[in-house]
Image (cartoon, helix red, strand yellow):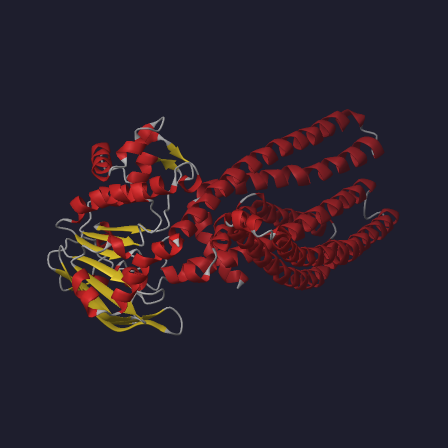
Length: 582
């Protein structure tokens, strides 16, 4: 898995190959300046101090200081380059993940909490910055420094170099199993972190209800339970990292290496095969050897953690939408004849919501669809808009299967108004345009005049350019619903869908909507799903659904005379206010 993940990350490095190349160049310079300093130390000791040649002590001391300064400068440049590289790549990945999520069908969102998706887009992608910033370069730098040190030691003392080389396989075997263990733990940590993000996001939305039902302690205790599980996993990882590895393996391996160098070097000095300066140089090189070893292990561990996040990111990117779009360029639909639901069946999981369902809607016809909850009313709309695809059967617009129409082309001329209003950060004007800059301000203003929303918009301090708070909560429910209606009307749709759109509207606001609907429904195909039956009495045809089937169809007068399900529902709603007054 790790190799495949790193392989899949390679294209992102490739996109920034120039910056990555500059980073590699700085690494090479830093390595030269770093490994050059022990060499000058040996020259100072052997030639200037032991050899008594004081004339060159200033030269080698100056070179040592110069390499120290140049090393610091190039390290700083390296940090700047890699930091910018990491930011650009992470932003690219984040945009790609977010854009991919927006292409997925509704079934994906049925299975994934919004909080967890936020964690993957933000937290998991940010974790990749470890790979694309200093960690990746530090990994390369550590390897280069290690190779350089081994080459110098082997060149100066081949026997000592051979001993060190022979010990490396043992170090890397221990290192491999250590990382494998930690990676499994950190993957679970990321999963727990995602669960916590999802939990917080879901319950933040319901804070008023939580406070109303005095459930703060229960919600807090549940969060504490999630956090404790995450803490236990992190604590386990830190135990293996700090105690088992650094305190045991790293300490003893470093101590053993320094003892080997001292033993070998002192014998060499007595035998005349090594100078004091060479021994000090070897000691400094071995000190530098374990710093990149430490960095290497630390960085690989960090990358290991990031790969856990990376795996979750690619799980999202590998998710294929169950709603397949066509490949060729889209054309906007223009309803000329009819919409046909042809013997369709659909189920969300196990049970069918619709079974062998058929319905024909003529152009310009105003259709109302009613029925008990779960009867399949909203499912019809979801299938028409291709938020889902039918399990069986097909839907046609003017004898063209909607699967043969691009999703963009299909939805371009359909307007949907929901009971739950979704408004986005930005001005009222931007929301009314749905952030489509091609729509002129004049078109928006005209739609607001027709609908009647112009009356409350002009009373706002900045009118159409008033900034909306989160979910438009600086507007009343009726005003938010009017904004939603106006936004739909701005599109000038061929097909208008109202899904429980007037159920939360007060009487005064509904008056404006009814006036506007009279104008806008003319010569426009309309599908109205409603619980308030008083709003659909003038519909051309009323479809009554129950258990995924049509049980009645006709206009208001006909259905009242039939004395069926519609008549019963209508009479219940009509008499309900009287019962309440009593």
